[in-house]
Image (cartoon, rainbow, N blue to C red):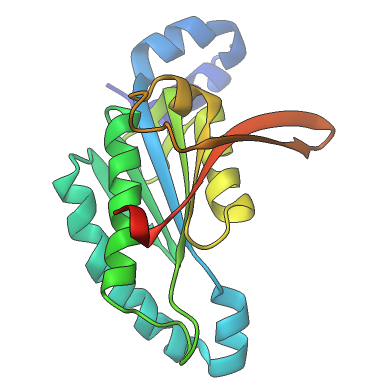
Length: 202
């Protein structure tokens, strides 16, 4: 079977608008999954102040900490890209537990960004039906876009942010400490849920 992008290319070559075949395409390539986007805090600032090798050394250490955690929490797949981690889970509960464990493990490892500043990660989590391509592109969909926005642009170090879909489909006990917030993106108000990692609560 052709992968997603090959199939889209075939439709376009046949003068067929893929949008008109949306239901068929989602039925063929859609997967309901939870996506976790992890970003490291301070990449640009620390690289400029201390040099790229200084930051990359700490980035490698972070990867060595986070990789095994994702596997322990039943990830379907994950990949590292620069200072980001993209991980896929069957359910948001697994993604949330992995996120909280990642925050805790990075802190317990006493990984430092500078002499006085701890290395911290920022995490966004989404959940829903997304289009999957077996090539390197991976998953596509609104929840992927939202999770990326939350993890890479909005979350501060130590924070885990959930989309509404991830929050509503998660175990109530697991998300009871998340607070509801909202923000405006290109004139559209978006709701999300936030938890700041608290070492005293683990």
